[in-house]
Length: 166
Image 1: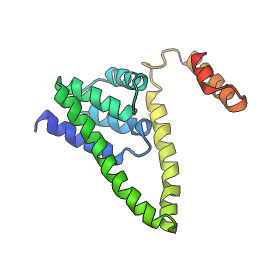
Image 2: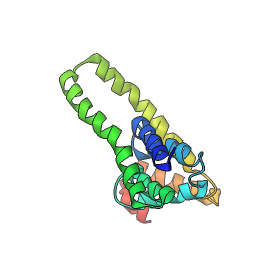
Image 3: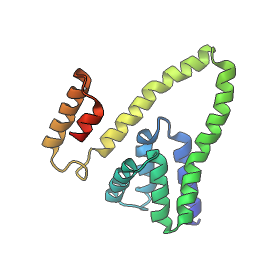
């Protein structure tokens, strides 16, 4: 099977099951691209950092970059980018029509209530995934900075952008 077909299959799975946005899909992206050996753990950490710095969703940015790295071509970037977006695009297109017709349904309300904790769990999983030696070589300072940032944002009226700049 060609590398393009493998990328299409991997990113179709990521696109179909990546609920909760880019950070929630990081664990799935890692499993699909690091486990087969397409990229290393260090490269994955670097890709996440680059994807965070560039405009756009992290899932799409990482797909574009990984497609290029794995295939060495712009076509690989295009294939992975379109493939990761396609399931969401089609699902949102259909879901918006369906939800608009059934928005008062108890079942629909129950589904959304059930998805909230799942998304929180996926985002927490991404946070744990990124807590590795490559990102945090000195855990003591990293923990102190993280806790201090949380406390300042949560308990004061200081704007989060100011905390980031600080």
